[in-house]
Amino acid sequence: MKRVEILDAKTKDKLCFLDKVEPNATIGEIKSMFHKSHPQWYPARQSIRLDPKGKSLKDEDVLQHLPVGTTATFYFRDLGAQISWVTVFLTEYTGPLVIYLMFYFRVPFIYASKYDFTTSKHWVVHLACMCHSFHYVKRLLETLFVHRFSHGTMPLRNIFKNCTYYWGFAAWMAYYINHPLYTPPIYGEQQIRLALIIFLFCQIGNFSIHIALRNLRPPGSKTRKIPYPTKNPFTWIFLLVSCPNYTYELGSWLGFTLMTQCLPVAFFTLVGFVQMTVWAKGKHRSYLKEFRDYPPLRSPILPFIL
Amino acid sequence: MASSEEDGTVEEKENNNKKRTKSALVTAWLTFYNIAMTAGWLVLAITMMRFYIQRGTHKGLYRSIARTLKFFQTFALVEVGHCAIGIVKTSVIVNGVQVCSRIFMVWFVTNSIRQISTCIICQKIQNEESVILFLVVWTVMEISRYSYYTFSLLHHLPYFIKWARYNFFIVLYPLGVAGELLTIYAALPFVRRSGMYSMRLPNKYNVSFDYYYCLIIVMLSYIPLFPQLYLHMLRQRRRVLHGEVIVEKDE
Image (cartoon, rainbow over all chains, first blue to last red; front, side, top):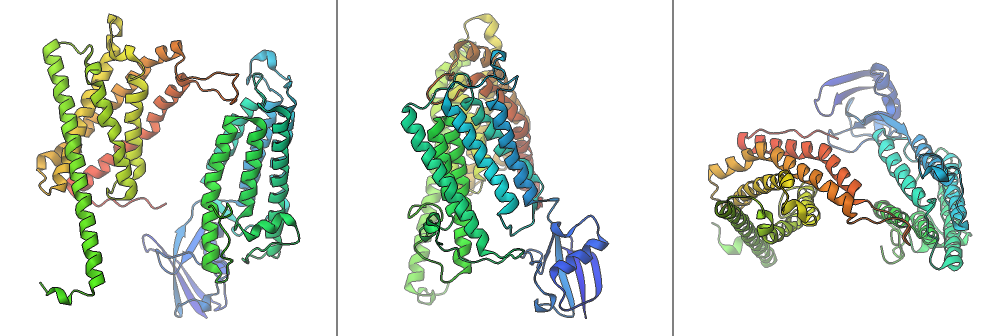
């Protein structure tokens, strides 16, 4: 039987003392016990570590496998209010879906009142609405049925940051695309057809990657494995890229930009690309760190380039 | 001092020499830069004073120094580069925001809107005063700031310069902000009337831009940004003048 004491990482105050803890107890179980004595700190917002400035211990870590004596001393840091990833994704994706449709149907007070509830005379505007809506419906369904998240929660303030980004850009793009004075693409039908092909190709590709990543991980587990190409040709890009889901996402938005020929869309694509590159590089680096035999030909997001 | 043969391998000595020459070059460049900027802003200050003494009015003062001001204020972009490569310990964002707001004022407000800087009609005199206000504030602040850096690099810092740099801002920052905001506010009717820097629909990029509303957003952005910069300077002041150790808030 071990004893566990939990100190505040900053003030070193003794916050909790647990007598008679099983040696094979996990950090997750210790977090639940700590939660009982401090109900305001639910397990998701607890960061338990061996060293005040060290890395957080994982919920799965077992007490007796940690470098501690009969009395284990842990340091606690409050991660702040947490919100589940699923909630954040659902909120940040529903916004653009609804907002774009409001502009598409020309709800009052957006454009001059004589245009209320009218529809655009350009067929590309209807196509763009279908593509945009399809994209976000796909994302919502993937959040509910496809993705397997490593972390359950993220800090609460992220939802405000993320929603401002998604909802703000959606409104900005939708305003111009559905505007009565919208100018259709210069090269007309050819441009729109090419754009649509690129868009659909990348949507299917992005979905294929999400399915492939899901299949790497059995339900309820948090294992990490190297993704490899499968029988689906859309996954063959894994030969050259670590995070092809981002590559396909970039492609989709490039297609949408071409389709609408709208500068705000181009801007949104650019900002998204910068953010996804940062994420891809991080993921690529952690793959390289975790797996000795990681394929050397792969780039983070763009084959051979980035 | 131990003889040089005992100082590790030849490679280490070479590396140390390289590091020493690099830091000597860096110091030389920074010293030159700060001396040049101090001199530039001194020239501006003297020109402004001479103009006022000779003409007795501030009409046309801005126009007489406009080119020199633009040169030295734009050159300050170099400082953002200094922060980015790390030879200066300020954060890129803090420095970047300050330099950008200055460049915005000089190139996109007072430069483009001549009516503000060359007031002919009496009613518009108050416009010019706000320009003079921020010009005087900037000049005093920049001279004290660059001379502070120069003397620090030369390791001969008179206490008066340190005192000036960390105390003048307490009054000058708010005054400068007032001058800038009043100037932008005065520019609004001209921007509205001339439709400058604006783009309307329909166009082939399917975007529109209204410089008038952009200016209003810039003015509103002073509300969150100015207190942060001011508090940052107050923290620096406490640290430098009173040797207080400030514990940064943990995220």
